[in-house]
Image (cartoon, rainbow, N blue to C red; front, side, top):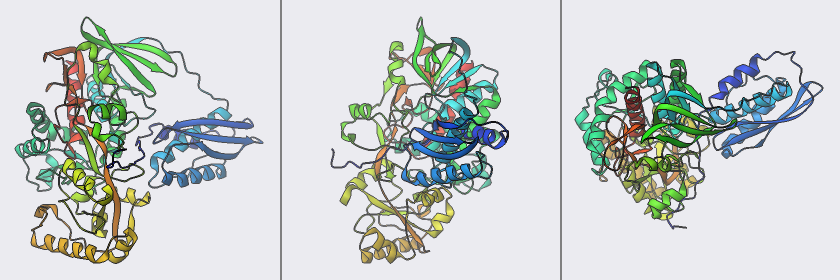
Length: 574
């Protein structure tokens, strides 16, 4: 194993859409409905895979309930036990049972599985009709941010839209997005008195990507960013808080009020909007191939629990994401990443690249694979870049800073790997915690080391207090003077980190984003190796390449998926 390897458990962060249905079903079920005695097992999708519960009914009443199989993280186990215990006490009702803080997805998965088990006990096992071939106007591969955006836009224009998601939940990698959506010259920025320009956004993105980006694609994204923010707000999204991320020269990262995580908020908004517009979302439906008819994309083949079938369509939109969870593919393009952990959900395996070969579709920059520098070793949870943007610093095991914390992800990752142990500590104070709601999730998950004083924190981290105290004093002086010896700019140091308690988390790099992918133009049309559009075939999101170049800036992924997801839908509708 590479000496720079950080062993991390892949965390698949997903949104369990079925949870709302589960809550309504169990809470409102007929109290007199008979329950047949016996033991029943049922499942629902969790973070990393199925959550399986076992429900025992005796004397017509719920006698016990427990989780018998799961792949969740350690902090989820109290949530499982607590929910099952309350469920039994409530006699098979979830009335009054709230999701456990920090384990919302796991909580909802347990509730949904209990609902399914209860249905079995009531003799209401759903009979699934055998799949049959059908047709629609537009079929979309993937129910992440790009796919759901495309579905909402296309369906709102009156098209018959079917979205196919191979996982059991919607969200893809988007659900784990914490930072926000980059956009310039927006109505929100103007309301907050933030001066920004499209030119500045364009230059930051090109510079961040080492000028390997396709400038036309970047310019197109930048110029449509403000309108996309307004569109998302119009369908129910809260993007009224604007922060600054590494590599950006201005505050342009739009996120929910208080700095809450953007993905967990945006996915349910998009699911609701897509379904309200008339789009059909099918989970556990794996697209196995794209149908070709005289050089045109004409539909897809699907494998689902109720059988294999075809969907013929006038247009196909690929929004299946990147390949960051496919270790073999990652290593084939970048051998030095062998053994690295990943922040990607387990469905990010790059299936689409094989499907587009028959169309001679062009691929680009497949070896441009980004590592995120602040990922928790051992479980793969990503600490959002917004924590640094709101003032946190990073220190090594000697208690010293070693790089400007607002460096781009590739630079920061390299710097951390050069430190003792190939990891470091992100450090902040109570003021930073209060400034960003996303931090509360890390607290509830038990990821943070907390010290009432700097000395207590240093002792808990096993780093030399004297050096750490000097580092903290020097940084506070840099904040007050506006001059940082490591090059952090004055507007990148909003807080002096002097107000206890103090917090820290061990972090290190993990595979985060695959910048390379299918070549598209500004209309999101898939291009062949000769630069010609493939009829009927469109793509958006991380499955595409060329927008981010050699390094993606934080906040640009959500911008990319929403902007080009909407463009793909508009082009397909034409």
